[in-house]
Amino acid sequence: MITLLMFSKTVLANENPYAANYQAQNQGNLHSLQNNPEPQLLIGTRRDADNIKMLENGYDLMGLSEFEAGDIAPEQAIVHGRNIQADTILVYVKKSGNATPASKMEVIKEAVKKGQSLTEKDMAIDPGKYRYYATYWAKLPPPVLGVHVIKLVARKSSQQDEQAQATDVNEGVRVIAVIHGSAAEQGGLLRGDQLLSLNQEKVNDAATLSSLVRRFKGNTVTIKIQRQSEQLSLKVAL
Image (cartoon, rainbow, N blue to C red):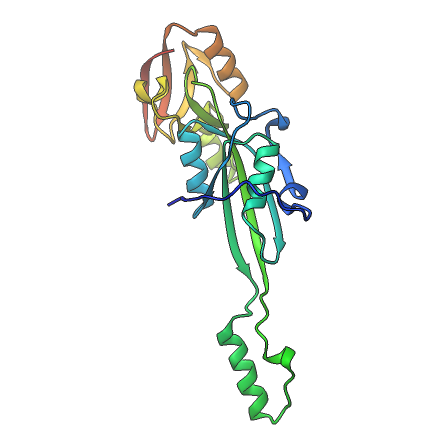
């Protein structure tokens, strides 16, 4: 589940840790299609599942921020999101350390039992630190095909197993997300499919797939896939 947060446009004066720890993806070329987007801030729950959901909804990852700090206002993520022209930001916050009222009480009880004196500092609850992780997303223009894929790499195993898997594992690309409403979804492609060829031309990486999609744009193509133990041919109108 992803929760929407609403904040004001106040710009904070302190150094922005979301900006200082930002790592751009896609060579930093990705940004919103809007001129001055107002990023939507969401609280993420499960990173992998959230990433797939964003891809399926037509977004692509611009970059991420990861750092450890005290209590940081969520508005700072929005400030950085505006600067890089992001449409949506997912923020994850996790407490680091074990400084809770319950754990502090155990320390105090143990000190009293041993007859040790306690200072105000000993009695205080340490606010501790948090692990912050944020991903920044841009909405893509309507796709021609509408899939996100990764190149398949053969896993190292016994020689016999490698020989048995050689023709399967190295061929094609794995579909990790199908964009909702896209030609791929309408043509029957599913997440997890192993995409082998398009119009009988082998597809071994994302660049080859993109090139073929551009070449056959406007046509109905035949896409050969491996779905579990079954090979299928799908007709997809680009």
